[in-house]
Image 1 (cartoon, rainbow, N blue to C red):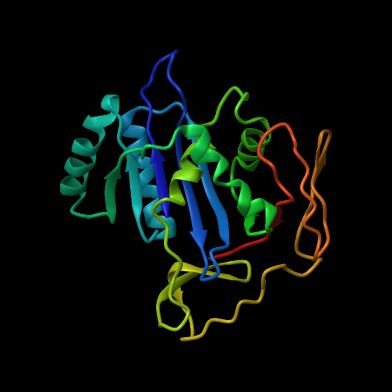
Image 2: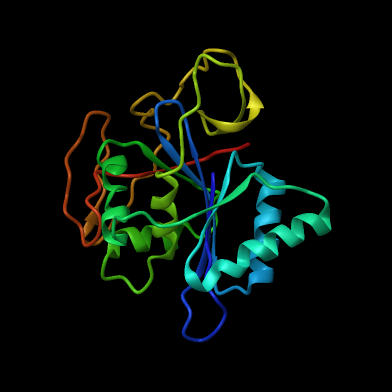
Length: 231
């Protein structure tokens, strides 16, 4: 799934964020690609087409606010110009506040169901935003990340699908799998896969059965994993 949180160019604008996340049949999520910077609409559209070409996401969702309504018109025009149609739709924020939406990520980390693919660009920015929310300078990545959970659905493990693979997890959308995909990672991956980080006040605990939770400066997280992944 690719979530697009647009902005407008200018010195007072927020960053635009394009966040690509996969989900396996156990609802474990894998952050695969992040693009966060100040972008014009033309740059956002190019980024969407580039990421779609590279990853073939199951769905592309564009968050629409009043200042970004024109973006979907331009995306539609670009699809016509290129003769290529994306699996894209617009969404609007639900009634939950941004803080409520972002804090919905917390259980993924408490129960070791969130994975950060090491090859993913701008992982440091993601992790900084997680640790410093809601007082951090930026929250564009985690807002888009959290919005994916509102639209993502795990694949059916008993149905043949085209699925991407990230590390050992089977995700919706890409390489053929068997009707009953083998979940090598399991609820707690092997000890040699995770890279746990210790960054000052944020201490991420390792251990297969360790559910200790520490209230760090941002979201409560029991730990997260950076793993090597591929498509």
